[in-house]
Image (cartoon, rainbow, N blue to C red):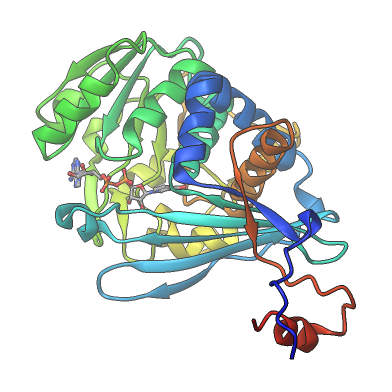
Length: 353
Ligand code: NAD
């Protein structure tokens, strides 16, 4: 047998890959506020064409310690999925509570067109979604947000609400004061006034927006009914798994509740504490002007966020556009590309040197 050099993959078979380092470069080069604004625009555009998507509640594999999930969706042109975990105990062992990566593919031929890290991207898309929803639901002129939970998502949320909703003050509280110190340090120079608080009662003082972003695998009561005054908007993002909630049930009974995709939120959201049939409003309908958002200044609005696949699809779509415009990425030899598509075996054989 004559020795041959292994065939080089053609550029067509190479898949753009955005690593964590590339994602950080993109955010730092464009500026986080620009990225959050652009991401929110893509998410809003996709929510407004909600009926065009294949939708399914995410596929979750639960264990005592956490959950691993696949989040797929597709429109006529692209298919996307995210792999994501949620392990509240991780942080104490030096790991992220949430890590993720995702793929965007062409529906036409099924080929992946992007592989991306999604740990940083999930924090960005979650913050962009929360603040986008805040734009529709928060009381007019809201200037102060209370943040329960000052972990990995915290600063992204604070900056997104500054950028999209216009808050100027964030009040921080975490059961671990070191987390609050870290968040306050990171938010220096962000343009936000940062107030460190030492209790839940203190953090909600004067806040028109309350974000709950804690991680604990239990029915927790981070927020009790007496902490929530009229007119407040609650952005509840930490309760996102069966048996993992943050709000006292009485708050839900006083609130108008807005959700992403009801079949998933009934299983994972705060509303798992309610009887099925409780009235909900789907956010895509609010964004299309087909359902009412905030009606009046005294109404309590609640975004029962669990994170839905279309938000990740939008985020991947956004990153794909950035890559096409030259954003940092590598090319991965991920797809077999024999000269004759039927000669997969021959390609392997010829590669033996
Ligand atoms: P993290 O582990 O980095 O931070 C969580 C923080 O919550 C920690 O600092 C912890 O000390 C604090 N905390 C725990 N119990 C508390 C309490 N009773 N009061 C105040 N603080 C408390 O986690 P993260 O990556 O920031 O994620 C936070 C939560 O958001 C997780 O539950 C995660 O699953 C969820 N999440 C939701 C979405 C979504 O789309 N809805 C997206 C990403 C993450």
